[in-house]
Image (tube, rainbow, N blue to C red; front, top):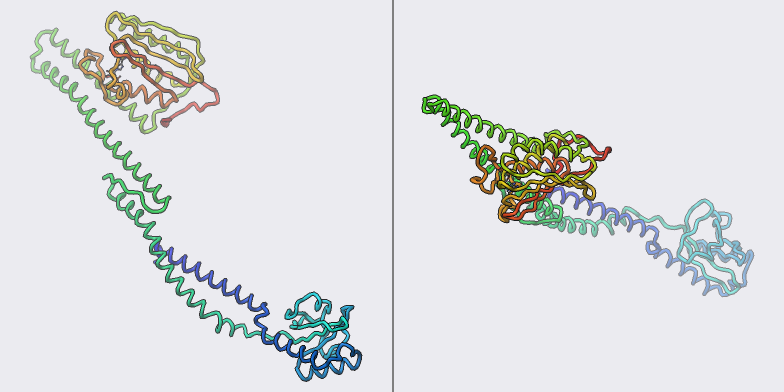
Length: 470
Ligand code: ADP
């Protein structure tokens, strides 16, 4: 019953109000108990008796001893009050109840406390008193035991009713406040629940309610935007993969058919058909392997062994590998390697990065051009660059070249080496996963430079990475 926000708010209000009222009632009650106001009648009585004695007995100042005792006893009998005369030395000189009542504990208090206060006798009983100085320096004190107040009666007659009214009124008010407050908080929450149930349909919610709820709504809106983007990317990804697989599959089917039905008659034709089938199968294989790598990076399961890597040596191996290809394309493959500290990275994956970059550079550089591999130390890292004198990348294409399946001009990258637009995206992801970065500078018609920055190896750093560090 009290699981809803509204009921809980109301219950807490009711509890707070009730306890506040009870506390106030208690404090008021205690205050009344100690306050002279509660004994006003008694004090008036004490003062009247004292004044009557003073006015009717002008010789009081001069009397002492037996005479004084008799006088005080007489008035005690007449008024039922205790009379004392206290000397300047703070000692009781005469007491109307000497020998009958317990002596007052410390008579000097009569000088310290104001009339109307309470004072204890030797057994702890409290007396209310009213005192006045006499002409000779002594003081006259009239006392009576502090009357017992009818506590329950005060509570019932004087306090309970106003407190009950205040309580009822406050509870009513709290009901309204709880209702308004809970609506303020729960409406945006309820909207969130409804919108969450309608997922994956993305609904953007307006910011309402308290700051925390607004922050939650903002986080929800961001989440749905990201989700929509991911869904869109997934749809495009599947469409791209299907599209990229369609061409080689059609080609393989066509040539396999030609081999089967004898359309490819001569040994040369059959050789050519088999070569094309193998080339397309290789292309599909490369694509599937790259996609697997990307999936592993996305899911955080790509294991990287981060060890010290000698980057110049690695680039030398890459150069050796591509030398025949460069030679065939009449493109000069040059090196400019400075001495640098070892970088932190996975050797095989870094080789994959530079293979892709050099492969692209050779692919897009016309005969007679030049591709240069450079390495130099950075501030806190090592910088490597693959520079070519090729066609460059247009301003429009530049922001997209690291996107999956993006190709600037598919017609340009024909032949056996044509890609599917995954090369640079895997390069970027692999570098990010090991704390590296890639940037590109290009001048259309003049060439491009892909700059890679890699962290210097430090022995204390963690050497196994299986999550994306993006
Ligand atoms: P692909 O595997 O098809 O080459 P990439 O992801 O490696 O795809 O490259 C994406 C696009 O970037 C390519 O289509 C190409 O047009 C452009 N590109 C990449 N490297 C270079 C380069 N060195 N010079 C000019 N264009 C390049």
